[in-house]
Length: 388
Image (tube, rainbow, N blue to C red; front, side, top):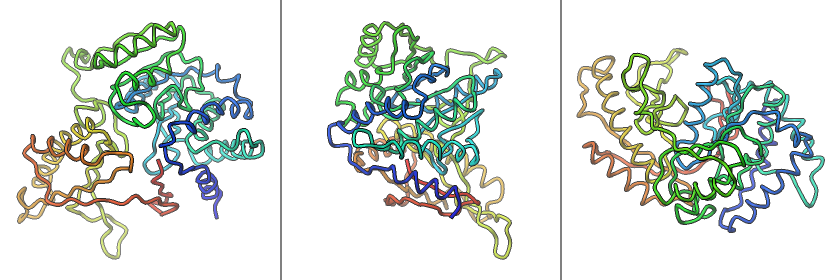
């Protein structure tokens, strides 16, 4: 067994598997333990060395972080980016200068962090759960690798999220808010916004994307309470490019994103199986349209994006390698769908269906996928992981 596989196996032991239906008690207790873990790693007082940009939100917080990282990197800063979940490799969560850290860097910091927290675990504070451990590991990496700025994406909520152990960010942001993780965050926009605004710190500038009045009011109340200025950021369509025209091409596909490419988010992947007896990919008419939408609002955006992307792909196919006998009418569109137990599949699929109808698109088949955790399936020479 390789050291990399051993590390992944050790990391897997931190997956609790506990349901979130306990009223958030375990969630709060875990956050309270973050201070203990930081002390055990001797980095509790060093976090002030990091210039942190902290971003919360329901939708768009990940792409906001990617935008910020890209802009700062283009200005010459050495950037650290912490996001979740990952699609294929856990190292996607911890990136330096726009690239996931290498296995060597991961292992260099993984074992000292894991061994220290395992050795010092006791009845009051055992080993941290999966996400909290990776947050601690990311902070360790960014300190050791001496990045100029860290862009930190909240995992869930804000107030009790593991990333909120950072008490002195240089700026905070809140992306679009909606209904998600209500078993922990509350059943109203006011409650959800209040939890998200838990990342606000005294005197630290805070920005928000445009919000519904109920959410904006809650954000402003929290900002006033902690003594931080809150500003509403302008939307991208109010900016112009250097030529004076509107900004129209920014990163990730889909009007709802307007950001940059990210695996599993508005991603188009063509199947390229190897031809028999060779290692060379052969043409295939199978194309995957992948998106991680998991709220009704994001499913609407997913449907809009798929309509545009599928029509464009069909046009490209008919103009290039598609057999002469094929046409747009020969296309078979298959929906492969999966959601976690806490989600409402009826609400998600209804939003998607409405968006597809508006684009005059219809799925020919629909399949329900089962959740599967793959440990070490070789994929292009790398271990494939589907943990979140």
